[in-house]
Length: 195
Image (cartoon, rainbow, N blue to C red; front, side, top):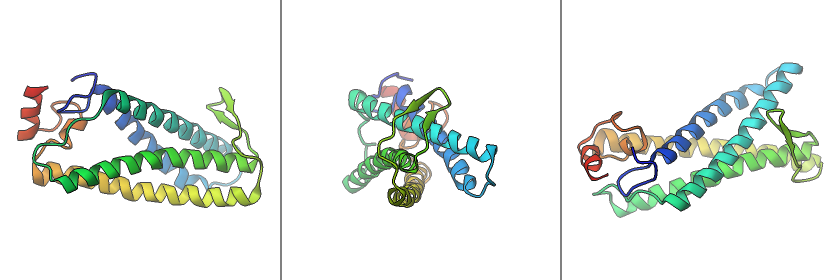
């Protein structure tokens, strides 16, 4: 598997960053959806701290992923992909990137407006990006939640499109984002010969 992206497939760095962010988002969703209902106490405080630390990690990883994509480029569209699907896929990718940046930033605003310190896994504090403000805290909380649900909807559509391409189009759209050999299609076999 190539380290850097090629015209035929995503490289190992892009794949690693993609799947690492996916796993962290699933963990965040599980934590985020249960932490509000937890009784007050040390467990709730630790859960919120973990949620914030993972959120900051996602923000850093997405910035790294965007930087890598600008440096390494992206594969060309799978041969035979209609232009409208290619444009829609590109729009979806960039919308997901925007949400993956906006959600942790809205959480940072939410935390800052509440007046709580923001620590990364207890190792160091990050600065507040706004002053303490109850109204802003309430707004940021609502925005944070809406952005999350928008990302869920977009991520489900993104995954559904990838599976549609794999199961019905029988092309390499999904196969080129997983480790080589995990999925086989006629198109992925041809792409491996080219890469």
